[in-house]
Image (cartoon, rainbow, N blue to C red):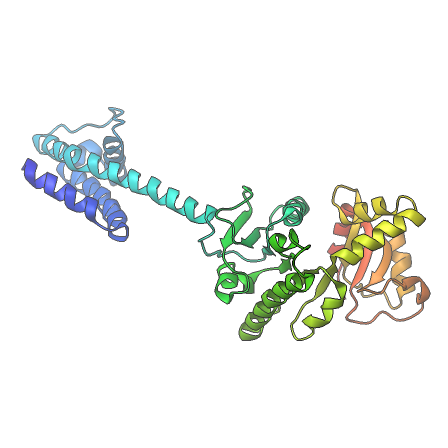
Length: 351
């Protein structure tokens, strides 16, 4: 009998996970059913029998239930011999599976199944700050980082990692690109550190390849994907005319412009930083057009009363020169206000 149970246990250990876990559940269910048949008056109900089996297999043994018949005691001995070893293997497999999943996550080999996430391509100090900004801006949004690093460079609950070439469609799909809220492509940090010997065209060229791969997926899946791209040289933006990019961040030109303006207008860089950072009470937000706003003046006046300042429609910052012009239906209005005021405005019925 002992040899039989050893062979049975050895066989169960060799079972693959897909068969083993259902078998353990079936084993517990059948053990409780047999216990109830052997001692119906003792256990009284299937729930009590199931409770007894679980406490026995867990070696807890509270003592509130115990077998009283010879058949029940023999069955309990069999339960000890086979069941405790089986549960031990089950626990070991569960821990091993959890560890493997964690290793896949850290190593960037898992396929992300969520949606409404933000994909960041390229690890650098800029992407690190971007992740921190996203996590502070929204308590639910998840972030997927794509890079070639051996393991995830930042450990955060809502940050996931995909290791691979972002210009490869398979890598982008692994990050569930089609369900993402948007993508931000940062200039390649490794190349950027060697700009003295590498032409910036190569940096923006790699960014262009990634944007091309995203556009290809967007066309295949017929799914709109918002793409923001960092370019090193503003002149290279023309190279992106055949791919779909929603917004460009011309790094060098923005830095140079801010530096020069800081000389002529002291404190202007602090104003830029506060407008773009959540550390300030007020920030820039996009709001929906309201039904009763016919002209920009209507919107400007109404928003001022609510504690917000209308500053732009899309990239047009000359709102103050056309207050009496009608607001187009496809307007994208931007205001400066607090997050609380933005929430109140957004909750109103949009056009």
